[in-house]
Structures are given as C-alpha cells and as structure tokens.
Image 1 (spheres, rainbow, N blue to C red):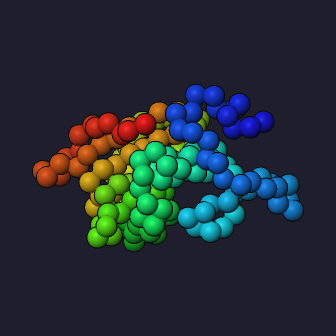
Image 2: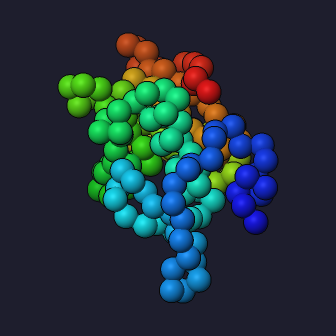
Length: 150
C-alpha cells in the first residue's frame, strides 16, 4: 500500500524520492542529502517529506540542511533529525520527526527542546506528518508557539 493511501491526511507532499526493494524484501528510499539508501520506515517517510518541504516549498538550499545532526546530551550521543543552517552555517531550525502514529505531545516537544539546548537554533518544529507544532526561542530563553509555513 502506498503511503499516500496509508496516510491520506499527511500535510506534506509525497517525498518524491526513488525507492527500491532490497535483497531482504525491505523497501528503501534514496536520501539524496545523505547520498544513501535508508529503510523506508513511517518516521523516515515523514523525514523525507519534511526535507522536500524545506527545499521545494520553503526554498531552503539543500546544502543548508543537515540530517542526523549529532547532539551530545548528558554524555550520550543522540541526533536531531533535521537541522537547517543559515548562510553563516549557524543553526536556525531543528525539526524532530515522528512516525504518523506517534502523538505530538509534551514529551516529543521536550525531546526537541533538549536537542536544541545543544544545537542553539531559533526555531524548533516537531511533526508526525499529520500535525505540526512549531516554537520560536525568545531572547529570554523561553519557547513560544509560532506558525510553520505549510
């Protein structure tokens, strides 16, 4: 079943990336920014759609998008799903992607904010492909809700 049939309420356009079935019968998607094939999990579907949204709809240059940005928290290596940087290579956006079945709740928002405590972006977005929560970091260090252009 195509993801557009499985998730008809996605708010982001289809990823438009090539897919293939590997030797083990698993569907993979080409991640052009990372230049490699990845297993097409529901979360990866959301990530691919968000990357397309950033590059095509919001016109963020592909060279300014980093997937799997390393984040070290409490001595543990973790990764932010997507980080967009400006012309001076300063992070301005952190995006945490979840599978469509995962609710966007306070726990998910807290995870993205923890990542951003290391990354230092001005905006934080969390999405499951069906809903989006976006926040701007104020000069006082608090997060306030904002709009994410769809």
